[in-house]
Image (cartoon, rainbow, N blue to C red):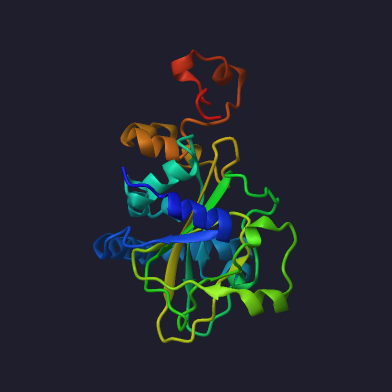
Amino acid sequence: MKSFSDHIKNIQCHGYTKLTGVYTNELINKVKKEFHQNHELFVNIQKKKNIYNEVKDTTHHTFILCRTMLRLLESNILLEFLDQYFENQKFILNTMGLSMLKPNSKIYTQAIHRDVRSFTGADKLWVNTLIMLDDSTKENGATWILEGSHLRSTKPSEEEFWNSAIQIEGEIGDVLIFHGNTWHCAGENKSKSTRHIITPFFSRPFIKQQLDYPRALGLDFANTLSDDLRQLLGYNSMTPATLDEFYQTTENRFYKKDQG
């Protein structure tokens, strides 16, 4: 098995690392095609809830309607890395969305932010990933990261961030990985094409998912999944809602005892 020790050290020291060539162009093109076929469904919900202007050009929990995206979570180099990063302890998908950065547009992810609101130091509770569905370049708004900022509890000033941040470029199929406490932001798209990214966040199973994926997908949907994907989507770390669901034999427990 390949060792990812250097990549893990990069995250521990600098707050980020990058894996190259994780996904094929063929798979990524299928994911993008399905997304654009369903994008209007997300827009309609956002407009109905009067939040479209706040979240414009971003969709959340996108694979609920775009199931091809689940293929990005099947066995691959990224999942091998995560096994080593979490030291062979169980982990789950906490959230997963798709973001479009259109030419000369403004979206909320361009503000300096970190995705974990509570500072957890260097503990391996969260890790963020950014799957590049297009080449990410300085011209089309590649992500900016402040190195080492995952070790600080306070937000850097605008001046400090822009004096020291670096822009992470990459190619289609590459994956940027960074600690949940790393301060970062999307860049400015000065090109003529839209930049698409998918951002799966992974966490230890005892941290709440941002959407209850097992119930959103349906409990029977688990029967169509591999053991690894069932684990990743949270079917082994569900919270029982009734005493009947709570009192179960070991094999039928909602929250399995190996989840931490």
